[in-house]
Length: 81
Ligand code: SF4
Ligand code: SF4
Image (tube, rainbow, N blue to C red):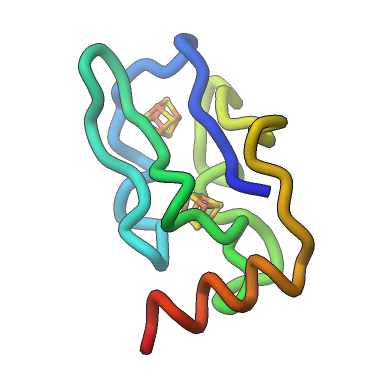
């Protein structure tokens, strides 16, 4: 499942350099996660790195992008191919 950033984001920028897939970028008002690139960090780290560094804890699972671990690994492999 990809993750999403809620409007509690303070645009602090802490999560951006932590993403192994460069999935996080500035949106219209606050940062956004590209669901085509987010693998929940599967393939690179044991835990979602962005969630670990986010001060207001505004990064959550995106219910509209449910994926299995196998699908996330396949996505990661394709991104790195
Ligand atoms: Fe990037 Fe990992 Fe956060 Fe997804 S969970 S946006 S891959 S840091
Ligand atoms: Fe927004 Fe959290 Fe990323 Fe900071 S770490 S930019 S508050 S999502």
